[in-house]
Length: 317
Image 1: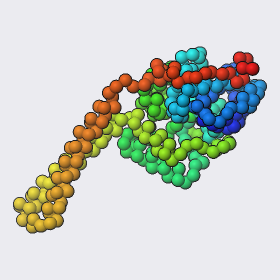
Image 2 (image 1 turned 180 degrees about the horizontal axis):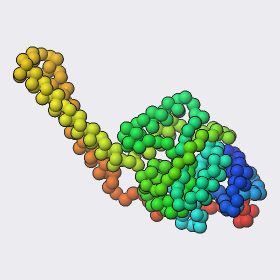
Image 3 (image 1 turned 90 degrees about the vertical axis):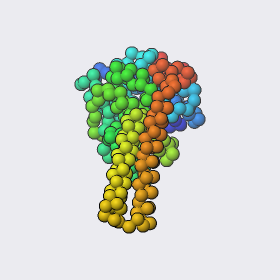
Image 4 (image 1 turned 180 degrees about the vertical axis):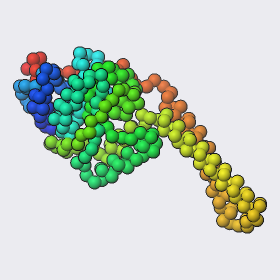
């Protein structure tokens, strides 16, 4: 669970998760809180309380603020490299990913441990502005990629799937999109999003837009190809319109007036723009593939400052 100054909410979620996981028999569940360089001080007391279902609660401190998605990438890499966990459940620490739903995901995983399972969002408790923006983002994402957005961070990964994702450079930008691009075996479970249990969201409008752009950027080759095809189709359409204008002027003696000249100029500009757009998009996609990308599973080590056990047998005094 990535945390940024949300310690009160994270403590409530841990307690609720401890209760929810009581219905899971025989599964050893532990929590890794990823401190994304929070400025608010941590009171370890709420996390140090004895647990019945959670074997331990650990805190992974990062050396700098990297954002929610990169914090997830660092944590997945850390767990894959230094833990013997057979599965990793990714969830938010504010309560919007409900602890009882987390227990459901664990149960679904135990029934089919070869498959990643993602929560597919149904009802959300967001403001109207955010809801409109979210549906607009889904539309734009579908137009640019042909992929419908229905999943987010809330999911459980078998160890093999986690290993595939941390070796995917795109997971440094967007966790869920990288899982789709990596084509890991995936099932989806419809779940309603919950309400924040404490505090206020740190996500701004700019952050939401940036998050959406990061999701689209994961599919940059696909987006580039679709835009190139659209530009080519526009150019062909322009050439057809230009030919039609020529026929009308030369054969049917349509007056070569201002309207005809304007249509001719607009058509030529559209064709030229389509050609230049195709070249610009092609070079942009190629430029995105130049240079050494960050592979979280290889490059995560410098981002970790410390690891502390807050509750459990190895809890710090």
